[in-house]
Amino acid sequence: MTQDRQLHRWHVQPDAQALAVAVAARVLAAAQEAIARRGAFHVVLAGGTTPRRIYELLRDAAADWARWHVWFGDERCLPPDAAERNSRMAFDAWLAGVPIPAVQTHPIRAELGAPEAAAEYANLLQGVGDFDLVLLGLGEDGHTASLFPAHDWGDGVAAPDVLAVADAPKPPPQRVSLSARRLSAAAEVLFVVSGLGKRTAVAAWRDGARLPAAAIAPARGVDVYLDFDPA
Ligand code: 6PG
View 1 (cartoon, rainbow, N blue to C red):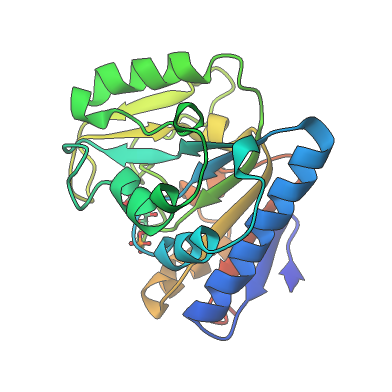
View 2: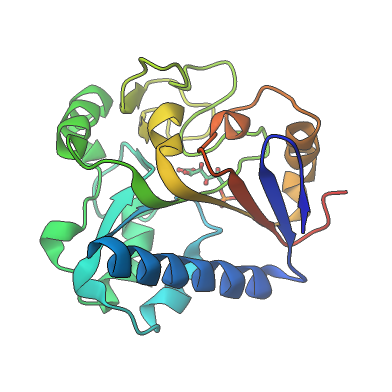
């Protein structure tokens, strides 16, 4: 593992399966610690395709599911059952197979349209406090969640919790995303980065480029799990 001054810890795994196993273990450990400390575990899920293996491993794991509260870092404005919905992937790969109470699983109702869904999710997050763990992916342009370069990332101190995105460069254009500020309000943030297609974005990130991923700055730093050597 290597570490830089912005408190990024880089964890290189030999392949995608080892990456999923390592991150799933971190999620379960974080849950155990949070539940022991405060009786609940609030986790934010990453979208995209990379996390699927992680979610499948979690589906088959033993955990105190009744104490879990599941949030989403972003969502695409598509019908709830659309295959490209982040919530659909998480439910199919994991959540439908474990007994987390339905009232503790919070998909973003992005089918309402970005502005209405963002306002509704912000209300839901009122009083939730810092997340125990945030999972995030990384796009080839350095985006994370639905925070894209040359767009508003919501990284200012007064930024809202949730952003309505109208013109995302990654389809669909309409999305809802937690802001960089709200995603940073977390005890732990784990990025999961798989595939050499992400190498350029990781190199720019490590070089200090101003990217959405770099705007995620929790107090205790960020752990980045990769299945390639970023050096
Ligand atoms: C989304 C995701 C997005 C994703 C990255 C990586 O809705 O698309 O939230 O931020 O995590 O684009 O996607 P892959 O894991 O599919 O490479």
